[in-house]
Every structure is written in C-alpha cells, then in structure tokens.
Image (cartoon, rainbow, N blue to C red; front, side, top):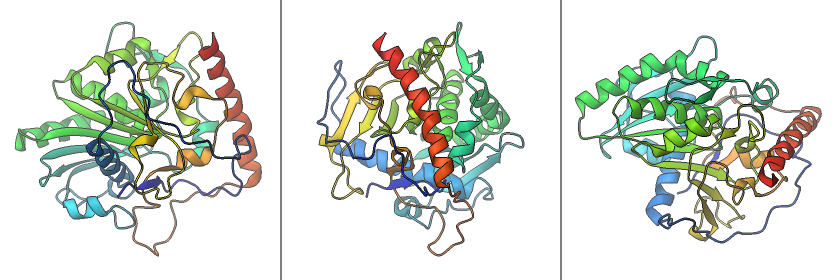
Length: 339
C-alpha cells in the first residue's frame, strides 16, 4: 500500500490558485546511468513515508514502547518497531524519534515536519551559515539550528542502537522540514562512520552545492522524493545569492493522478540527477500546495476519530497570501534555471 502522506499539518479552505488543473502523466525518465525504479523502490518509498508520518505521534513515546501509527500506517503497526528514544527541541520544536525494526533489521531516524506550513513558510529566512561538515559548505541557519537541538541525543541513540544491533542498517526519513533536518542528520551520521540511506519527502534545499554534493557523495543512498508541483522543494530559491542553495541527488518525482493513489505506478516516477536539475519538480513555475500535503500515504498517525488537534486550518485569505509568497520564490528559482 502506498500511503498518501497527507500529513497532519493543515487543511486548505482554498486550493492554490496558481495551478488549478492537474498536470498530465509523465513517463519514467532515466538519467545519467541511474538504475531503473523497481517495485522494491516503490515499496520502500511507501514504507518510509509511513515512518515519517509516525513522527507526529511518537517523538514523546517512552523508550521500549512500540511505534504507534494507528491512523494510516499499517506497515508500521505490523512491523512492531520499538522506540529507542524520542526528542523535541525546546526552541525550534523540532521533534524526532529513533526506533529499531527487528523484523527488518533496521534502525530508523524519523524527523517530524511542521504542524503549520503557512507559518513556517512565511517566517522562513534564507540566511545560510558555515557548515562544519565540509570545507566551503554553507547550511541553512534555521535548519541547522533545529538539527543542533536534537543532534547530541540522536547521535547517542543511533550509536547505542547500532552497538546493540551491529548488523542492522540505518534509515533516515522525514517530510518537509523533517526531510530537511533528516538530510542534515544523514550527513553528520555518515561523517561519524555510519552508512545511512535517506528517504526525504517534499524537502526544501538545505545548503549550497559544496554541502549538498558532499552529502550525496557520502556512502549511502539518497532518495529525494518530490510530488507534482509541490513548491517546497523549490525553496530556498537556487538563485539566491550569495548562498546558491542546492539539493542532494537524485530526485524521484511522483507525477500524474493514479486511479489508486495507494499504488503509485512506476511509469509515473521520473528520476532526475544533479543538485540543480530542472527536469523534474523544478520544470515549471506552476505549483500546487496540495501536492506538498499529499505524499504516498494516510491522513494521520492517530486512531480514527481522535481529536484533530494537530491539524492547522488555513483560511482563504491565508492561502492567497501564501500563494503570492510562493509564486515569488518559485519564479526566482525558475530564473536561476534559465540563467
């Protein structure tokens, strides 16, 4: 089952006015010798989308307790994953958990995204600072601060889990802001000597080319998953000087409108390589905010009927304001693509 990660962030009172019609199906695009997408890849996209979704309900779960995701994570529920440690930053409110999946022999780091995308985007600053991961690297200041709040605990939890389970592989996952911080965490975990595979969903750019290329070149696999005209992967704009934000690579772009959104066809997954490619999600100035809210999965990690305390409604006026802001950023990003 391919969850529609309609994460518990917001419900829109008005749809994005920039792109009101759904784009046409796009065929699989193979680039630069990348291996073709397989059914196993799609199952993994589904699986780690569920674990990303579960971060909304498990960052404060006690160590040793099962990972709970009753609202729409059937695989997480059946896996029987156990919490190693949960985390929440006191200032940025970033949250995450580390868990072990004995049935899969895996250690998973899942970082929670934002609960209010409108507030997050309108308050998003694009200032970067020096990164200690690689010489010449610049990292988004806000994303870096969020990671630093939980970094000591996360690194310690992964170290302990790996000590207890030396043969287990390590996965990092997250959606939106969570995907950005999971990407940064992947860089630090790899530098500490761990092989980590990354699965991010709708993640923004986290730093300049030196940083993104360094993370891409580290041992481990990148799966930067985007959906349709999601505008969030277009920010911070790549044209923004002096930072020149770039992505890790490759990108897996989910397109079309499958009859069954829980079974995304391989033919509608486009693969693009490069830290600033313009053939996948970045191929148009059109965008749909709803595409950011719908990634391979369920609507919530809580049981059906639970109070919708995490859902942050957006008025038509707020949606229009966000549309205008995103339109400016996406057009700035497109200007860099055309340069």
